[in-house]
Length: 124
Image 1 (cartoon, rainbow, N blue to C red):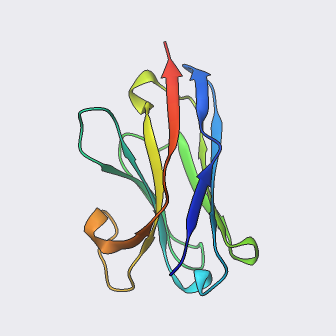
Image 2 (image 1 turned 90 degrees about the vertical axis):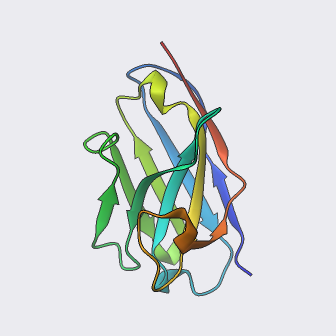
């Protein structure tokens, strides 16, 4: 079973940047699309971004489009989320996840492996 470990979260002022990383244990990382989700206190988990297995296709929630960039390095079995122009409403626990081959990109039920999450807090 793959293990996903997120890092890079922290406290940042509004307008600042953070880069999240998600390291996957060795295995067939390169054949799976990967995604980032987030969950704020009292809210449901929501889709943030996803990237295809070869990195050529990316998908974003409207709320982060133009500010966040997802990327991956298959040689390092790592997926990244560069977050710029952060807003207080971006405050949440961020999770990376592995998408099943036939799953739909924007739905968390399509992801079968999850990291433990990393906290991102944006102060105003």
